[in-house]
Image (cartoon, rainbow, N blue to C red; front, side, top):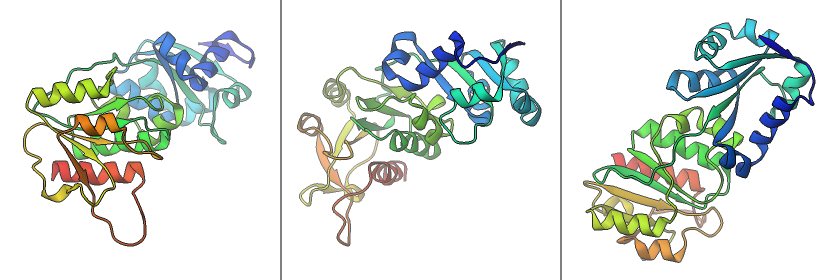
Length: 258
């Protein structure tokens, strides 16, 4: 296993840039993954791992995880603790990092499936949390339109591996996807904090359904709302005006799969 001790090594600079730049990830079709469990999940899930980096202490402490990653046949490097700190955006890095191939994008829906659709979510932690909810409740997939990158390091950590396992649909145009879904018999709902919207507990959720959740600050775009067959809301008490985006998504997903 080749050793890397210089923070200025080209492979290290490439990995750092993958972690920092969504456009660089998109350009190269790769993403950067940090953490023993996340890297192990990638290997176990069948994500293509191209390169892996381990500190000597990580190879010993997380030997079972490291062996599974190495067994994928990826190019492996042993790195110094100083290099691990360069790669990490956490205070106490575990010393295992991977460069992985990004999932192929798809716009294909299962018209009888259950989906959440996210429009322009800005907080990667919210995005990751929704991925976990989608997997935990058994939805058929997650539609992600605009906003932060699904492979943002914070989103990956918050998803705890779910984003690598669930079906992801990334449309070029959410309105077009919603119109196509409706034309193929799906129910499409816009989630809005409005008193005149239908109570989510009382609408039909039979068959194929998409429920849309909007941006943390401004909600769904008017075009997305108009593209949906109906607007739904989560009844609220107290003085709060709305739910956090990931909390709203969790409640809607629960209703969708109830």
